[in-house]
Length: 332
Image (tube, rainbow, N blue to C red; front, side):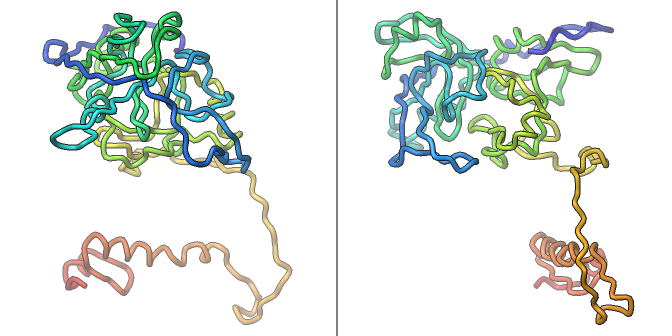
């Protein structure tokens, strides 16, 4: 976490609607690691590798350990939990979807079968796609646990809201996490300690999903310069990060309003090599000069016209496209 920020003005821990929250138990079993029919995974560098992945009980890496530069692919630190039961009514995968939806980071997890029965741990993450919940237990407990052990989670946090900050939406955050995070109110602002700021353009798998209660959201780290610029090589399991220029209240989307985007400056543009072709074209004009800007915008007007047709059903075939043409044009 970032170092403590200086306190100034009227600061206080934000109030939570604790009395409104429901605690409900959900359950799963320690999930086995799984592998596909092909053992190799090909990385962005084109190199095939055989690596450990999701599931199981990871003893070598826990929350707080580095998650970059390890010989693994989508490693889940600690204990991976999934409910493999099948529902009689509704969606057959309903029990596991309930585990995914109702569990919040910071909930208490309790082992209810096996040699470690009765031991308590903490939910540390949820992994969409593979649909597992991750929990951390003391090392001596995890060494006693086995794949197939049942783990019950005291789920609480769905429906949580910050009373003094109604414009902020909470997902997947248990009261225990919020109380220990170090959040504080400064007037009408909420100060949130984080470790990294991640530009929305770096987000990959999960982008566009219709909800944030479940599913994954991956940071793309294939470009070494980008990793260096944003200090992503220092990421650790469990880091709390901020994703800039994104609106996740109703799904995982980049900011809808272009006015909210930062304007790039010359400093944001990489070095450009300009190459002049030693060729004269007397057909284009007497000087044999061609413009370069027009080439890149030939398809722009057609793309805009197609987008308008897709949204309104009206096809405008002459420019400029104006409101009066849309109002008078019949649907195509």
